[in-house]
Length: 234
Image 1 (tube, rainbow, N blue to C red):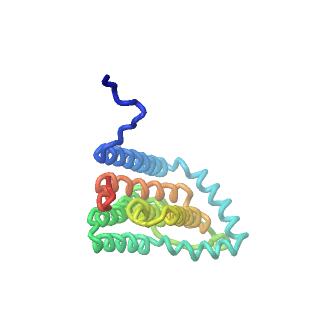
Image 2: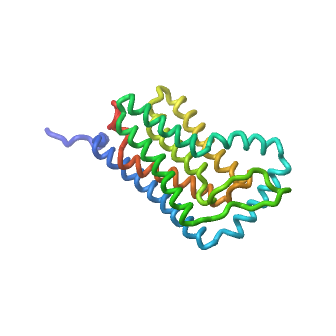
Image 3: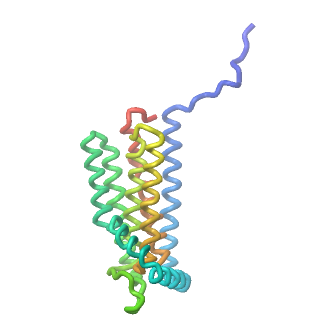
C-alpha cells in the first residue's frame, strides 16, 4: 500500500531562494537606514533639532571638561576614524579582495566607502550646518568644515559594514567571527560617542553618519552580492 511522504520532512530552501531572501533583507534594511538619513537631513536643514542638540552638547561638554583622562583618550582614538584613514582602509580592503580574486567583494568595498563619503559630501554642502561653537574656556578640540553628517561616523560605519559582510565570514572559527564583529561595532560606537564629547559635532550629526554609512553599504551589498565570491556561497 502506497503512502504519502511524511510531513515531518522539511524541504530545504534552494540556493536561489536563499540568495533572493538575503538580497531582499539587505536591500530593505539598507533602504530603511538611508531613509532615516534623508529624514534627519531634512529635519536638520529646517533646524528642528537645534535646541535638543545644543542641550546634549552642553552636557557632554561639561563631562569632557571634568574628565580630562577620558577626553585625552577619546582625542587619541578618534584619529582612527579620520576620513582619510577609513577611506584608505576601505580601498585597501578592496585591493586585497581583488588580489584574492574576490572581484565582487572588491567592487562592494570600493562602492560602499567611496559612495558613502560622496553622499556625505553632498549632504554637507546641501545642509550646510555649522559645527558647535564654544568659547575658549569650553573648547576641547577644534575642527573645520560643515557639521552634518559626521565624516568619522559615516566612514567608520561604512568600513565596519563592509568588513562584517565580506571579510568576517572568511574567518575560520565562529569565535573569531564573533570577536571581529564586536570589535568593529565598538569601533563605530567609539567614533559616534567621541565626536560630540570632543565638541566637534552635534548628536544628530553622528547618528546621521552612522545610518548613512551602514545603510549605503547594505544597499551596495544587495546589488553586488559579495558572498558569491565564497566557495560555500548558496
